[in-house]
Image (cartoon, rainbow, N blue to C red):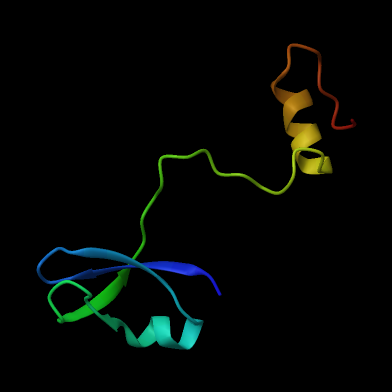
Length: 73
C-alpha cells in the first residue's frame, strides 16, 4: 500500500499507509481527531524512475552528458 499525506482544518499534516479506497474517504487526524483530506505534497528528494541501471536512466545520463545524443545508448 502506498503512503498518502493528509491535512486537517487545524493544518496538521499526517502521512498514512492506507489503501486507495480509504484514501478517498479521508482519515481522522491523529493529533486533533478532525476529518483530514488528502493533499498532494512534494518531497525535497530528487524523484527517481527505477533503478540506476534502467534503460531510461542510462538514456538520461547520456542525454545530459556533453557527448552528442542521438537517441541511442
